[in-house]
Image (tube, rainbow, N blue to C red; front, side):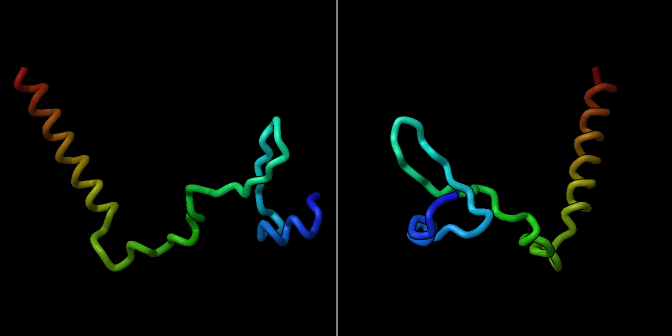
Length: 72
């Protein structure tokens, strides 16, 4: 547990992650590259169906592969 003064200085809350580098006393708040995926729910709503686009792309790839196999 970190002292309150340090937590406040680094703006750390319950559940915040920190990394500790060896060889020095240095605290660094861990930054997550990936946002919370739950916050992205519905962001593509109303646009093209991504599932339909993927299905069509896969069908085209399969047709191309089938044509290559039959042409050999």
